[in-house]
Image (cartoon, rainbow over all chains, first blue to last red; front, side, top):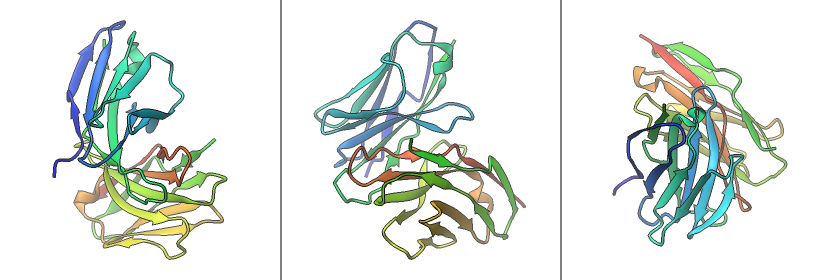
Length: 115
Length: 115
């Protein structure tokens, strides 16, 4: 069974540009989480999608946005890139049902570098 | 605010010895799950162990065990018979049952295993 896949693996953009990151969850998983892992800051929660809807978002500006498609894959868009957006962006999927104790499975991340 | 604190940015252990990684968390909820994730240099986040808050018995997975103290909101990870392959960043996390169900992570502890 395929795990969570993220593309691209690496992405280099210049300041002010837009970046699009993609995530395909494990088959059967309906929830997708996005996290930003900047150096020394641990994992910062960005967005959570479930069943095609945004369920929660972290403390990030509106230029961070995303969506979830009918097949549960997800896209993270970052507009007007800033140097401090350089980080590893991790996607995780989970089978989200009330009372379930299923863990989140992570992809290998997209390394975004803004120059 | 929901927070997870890992007070040890770095730890080291001799191969075959035992090491304990600390984690405290802050939530007013009573129903949640706790996790320890491992992130080796390959960047892939891997679940090490999980604990349901309603269970008093500490979880164990082979050489990995936890000391869960609910009243103290403490969730430490013990690694016995440390192996070179255990070297990685370790992240403590929790997720509330119901509600937002976003995973909240600590900043991580970098574990070095010395031969």
